[in-house]
Length: 168
Image 1 (cartoon, rainbow, N blue to C red):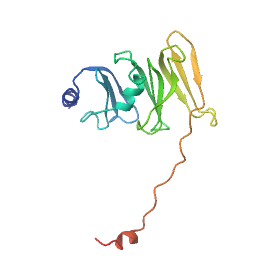
Image 2 (image 1 turned 135 degrees about the vertical axis):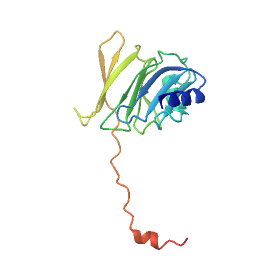
Image 3 (image 1 turned 60 degrees about the horizontal axis):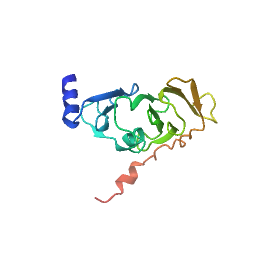
Image 4 (image 1 turned 30 degrees about the vertical axis):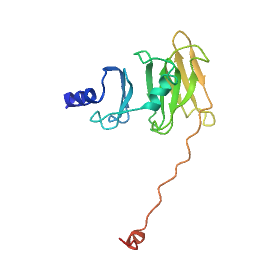
């Protein structure tokens, strides 16, 4: 089965993988950086799609070229499955909606330094969620003020009588 997955990736991407990351809390979620940008699989590598928004965040809107050093690390959160961070040459970017949108947390152009890894802490101070970023050749930076997740909205409960009244 592993050979099938790698063949699937090669069929959908013209380059070879420069870096790859798997979501440790969802083994079907795989991110690959290749010479064309970021590809994502949500089915364990059986199919792939290009993630233009993440590629844009990593390249600082196209200002940086794609290379193996572009993406240093990805951080996934067990308690907030929709929250993810990427660390790289452009800085640190975050998504809080499973990658639908990415926003910058630290811009390496504004604050020189190359983030290598980090740790997300939404618990220590509930009023000031933070990510701790380790930069190459520097100490750790604390970046607070991350937005809160919207409150959980349970799905509506449907009464079967509503469906019985539908006219097909």
